[in-house]
Image (cartoon, rainbow, N blue to C red; front, side, top):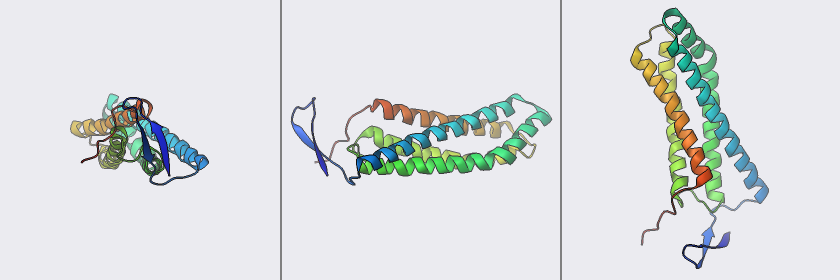
Length: 177
């Protein structure tokens, strides 16, 4: 399926090729799933960051109790929720890239979002080990810093991806001649 568009900057009409055309209603459903999963994923990161900050503000046994609760009651559900929402966000993003004029690597902002999504998934997996170690009662400062870094970085990356979706900066990736 191709759509004819006029580019105001260059003037002449060009054809935007869609790799995998899907019906409008299905495309909108996939878009809603993409936006909802991204929002839920940001929520998971906010919760993780807040819980890590609460533990960091405590000392001694109180800190251990916070990290123990985080590991026992939140890590597995947060990790599973984060992974599910991250994968749903990734899959729906790829589907939207294939089914819309934006493509997967046709525009720089889409390619950057794809990379950010993969990096945020890796950060989520990296969060599990250190938070479990902190729950044992040994709180080496570097582990607390690392957990804080992971949670905050993932939240910043996902927020930046959301900003890219709204503003759609940069232009098309130029084709090599």
